[in-house]
Image (cartoon, rainbow, N blue to C red):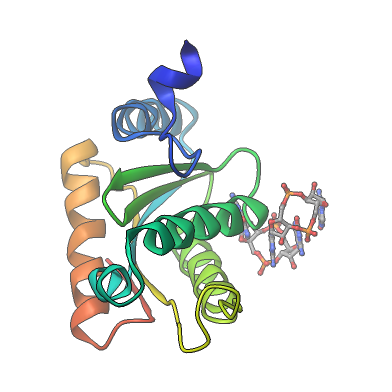
Length: 165
Ligand code: C2E
Ligand code: C2E
């Protein structure tokens, strides 16, 4: 019952409601311990094109494989959830902004290097991400909004890249 309530069925990552609750918790914990905290909004580039060109079942496989790849390359304390369609939120407790940007760039390169030949010879998948570090006056909304505008600038600058707030 807990899994049904907290996990996204397709990707096994936290669902939106749960990752938002964990975000509130991480902010509170970071404040209490006076520790840093960083987040990243991650978006699969041109995902609609992948769905259109290869069909929704393959689109679902892409989301699943992406999530497995992230889980294999983050630490157990890191929290990863599906924020919306092809958008994901990664919570990085006790992590400074510059370290977070490096982590996201590592994930970006790992995803860009994945071999999708089993799905389609021509398929390429990349991600863009917006990184934000917690500030004193942040609440969950302002924190997310800064990650979101960083994501927007990563997209505007050509995708397959990371931008930091
Ligand atoms: P883990 O902590 O669950 O990390 C899983 C994977 O996330 C790592 O696999 C690595 O690909 C990536 N990762 C996590 N933290 C970092 C990091 O600071 N830098 C980089 N470049 N990648 C990171 P990996 O490397 O195969 O390690 C497997 C497990 O071995 C880790 O699982 C962790 O439990 C342990 N481990 C590896 N190196 C260290 C280390 O330097 N210190 C500690 N305390 N544990 C380590
Ligand atoms: P690095 O890969 O340059 O990572 C620098 C710092 O970024 C780490 O310092 C940590 O604070 C943060 N960081 C990196 N990856 C992750 C991650 O997946 N999750 C979280 N929450 N934080 C991350 P730290 O812990 O002092 O590690 C220093 C160096 O030790 C790392 O430099 C890396 O070279 C190595 N290392 C530590 N753990 C692992 C691991 O699990 N796997 C691998 N491959 N290397 C590790």
